[in-house]
Length: 276
Figure (cartoon, rainbow, N blue to C red):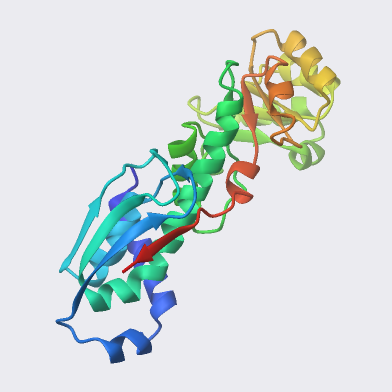
């Protein structure tokens, strides 16, 4: 579940951005006592996500709004299906419509794309996870949408896990030096992940007892060999050039995790509409 206080603050800022000093169309067409009823409909098949955020948009604008949902987050939805009924202040509904839709269309699109990827590898003991390639200031919603769609996440931010990438290695001098320095100072509660481009780097990271080894942009054969080398002594993550066509091939190598920015950063929005 999303943090309600964070959502409200985020939604308020989104409404400020969209409304400006006044909704000149709605405010001049309606009075404060006018009411209306609308339905949130889907024009595409997919996975619904963003119920709580959608409702909060209207609740911030008016206490006289009722939102009745017919689906829950994570439910599969079909083209033409009614997802929710919104009734009450016409002014609040017309003003908040675009902002509310922006949230649920984006979140439902990510949930749909995440589910699509995970379902392809369900026959393997592999988790599909996201990355930190997210929209600035929208990460909490995108991460929630990924979790709603496929259930698994990578680290939320830089403080979750120590991840040694290629530029860190260049700065430190080697994987060994980077891990040794980190182990002297980071908390015992934090894991260390190492991004590896070669099998030699995999062996080096393993020798230093890295917790997670990422196989970055490796061929299928290289991944198979890396899995043999690691032999369950670290969590194995495959990343880079991950797409739907190659997904099963990667899962079959024996890796534990497949990470890709595609399930969030490249997910299309789901076509939803609020119809009077």
